[in-house]
Length: 112
Length: 115
Image 1: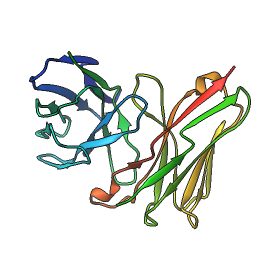
Image 2: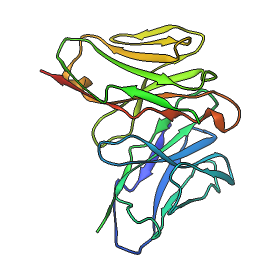
Image 3: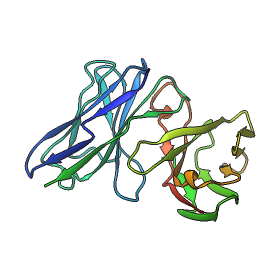
């Protein structure tokens, strides 16, 4: 079945560490997105990519980095510069303009 | 930039009653309006969408209406059931070939259906 897979489901980070969240899709979608969701809050765009080897900052890109070396993959690195990284992270993809997003099941990141 | 406002932020209804969630968008060039349902601890799932050339779309107990003149669209859930309890997000996009096809999301509505 086609879909979008995020891993791990739960991730714990120590202070000062960088961690990478994985996002893989087999939907042949061109565009991919990363969102952050805090408890009881909406979706805030971190980064997005419309094509391989190209990506743009969203509304809250500081302290995060991404890469898009393959169409299927769009990993997100939460760097030590992100002072409050505890949140639920959602990856999404879309096939063509005007089409809705397909979301992954999310990664819950906690700083310990 | 484009903005999508969503109301109410929380909604509590009795099982069997109807629920209505409303969204207003700012960019008149928007032409695609999806609705997502997010259950606790999960990613949002597309439940229904509508394009600007249609005024209403229905799928069993859910329906979406669009008023382009007023720039607002609404989600209607009839005969609500406890499993409808979730957070619902509206969104809008312009459907262009550039970054304008990014979805702009509303802030979400937490729906509680009381048994």
